[in-house]
Amino acid sequence: MENMNSFEVLIVGAGPAGSFAAEKLARGGARVALFDGRPEGEPKACGGGVTAKALKAWPHLLNAVGRTVNELEMYSPAGKRLHLQLDEPFAIYSRVAFDSYLRDRAQEAGAAVIFEKITARGIKRTESGWTLRGASGAEWQGKLLVGADGANSGIAKKLAGPLAPADMEVAFGYRAPLPEASEAPTVIAFLPQWVGYAWAFPRLDHISFGIATTQDAFEHKALDELLWQFMLGYYRQRAGSNANIWQSNSDRGVDDIERHLRATAERYAARIPGLADQTWDTRLACGEGWALLGDAAGFADPVTGEGIYYALRSAELFAESFLSGDPEKYEQRWRTDFGGELRRAAQMRRRFYGNFWGAPFTERMIEFARGHRGIRKVLGDLVAGEQGYVGLKKKLARRVLRPL
Image (cartoon, rainbow, N blue to C red; front, side):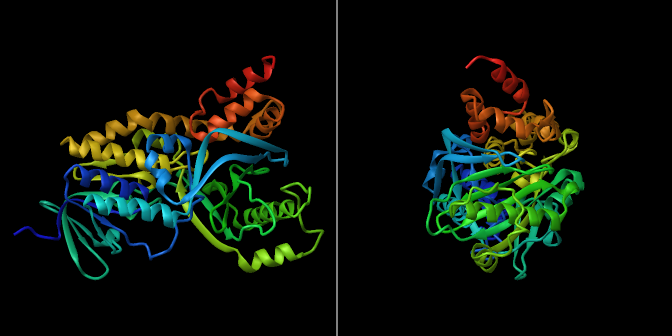
C-alpha cells in the first residue's frame, strides 16, 4: 500500500513559484506535495504588479481577479510628472487572490496542498531523500526538496548559505482606502536622494502604497516620512491640489485627508532579494536532491525588485528539468534563460540611479520623455518588462539627439 505521506517532490512555500511548480509537476505525472504555512487571508507584502512579459508568457494569469493597467503616471525625483500610455498593459493583483488562484490550479492538477508551516528546523535529510515535520508533529517524506519560501527562506540559508545585506532590498508600505470622489491612477515615483522608487498600485478595494530601496541604505524613519509625503501628495492631488508629489507637508498642519489616512492605513514590510552582480557567479539554486525557486533563490530584478515573472519562469524551468529526468540541469537552464539578464541588471543598479548629463538618470529620463515620443516608448517597454537595462542610457541618448 502506498504511503499517503510519501512524495517525489516536497515544495515548501505556496506563493507563485511554489504553486506554479506544483501545477507543472502534477500535470506531468509527478507526485508532489505543496506546503502552505501562511495564515489564511494574510497577504504577502508586495505591490502585486505582473508585467506584460509575464502575461504574454502565461495568458491564463489574466483569469485571476485583478486590474489591467493601460496607463500610469511617473514622477521624477524633483516631482516632474509624466503620463504614460502603455502599448503593453500590465496587471495588478491582490496577492491573496493571485496566490490563491495559482494554489488552486496546483490542487486541481493533482498536487497535494498541505496547510502546514514547515521551518528549516523541521527538515532532515535521509538516505532516501528528505523528511519534513510540521508544527502539528505530522511528517512527510520525499525524494527532492524545493524551497519556495520567499526572500527570508530558511531552506535557502540551510542549503545555499545566507545572503549578505548588500544582496537584499527592503519593501515597506501601507494598504489604504481608494479615493472616494475621483479616479485612482497607478503611479511610480523615483525617490529624491535615495536609490529606489515609490508606488501607488490601486486594487479592487484598496491602494497598495510602498517604497523599495536597498537594505544597506535603509533608514526607516526618514523613508517612512518620505512615503507619507508621497501618499498625502497622491490624495491631495486627487482632491484638486497641484502640489508637488514630494512636497513637504510640515508647514500645512494635519488636514482631514491626513487624519483619515493615518486612521485607516495598514502597514506592511518585507525583504526582497537584490543580488549584487558578483553574487550571481557563485550562488547556486539547486544541488543533489534540492532546488530553490523565485525569491528563495534570489530571483528578482535588482533595479525594480520585480520578482513574479522570475518566480514563474524558475518554476517552469525546474519542473521541465525534473520531468525530463535531470533535475540538476535546472541550474544551467535558469542561468542560460534569465541569469545573465539579472546579473546585468545588478551591474546597472547604481548607474540607473546615478547621474546622467548632470542630474539623476531617473530625473533626466522623465524630463526627456515629457517631450519625446520615442523615449516614452522606451519607458513603456521598460515597464512592460520588454526593455532591458543594458544599453538603456545609450538608447535614450540616441533618441534625445535624433530629430523628432
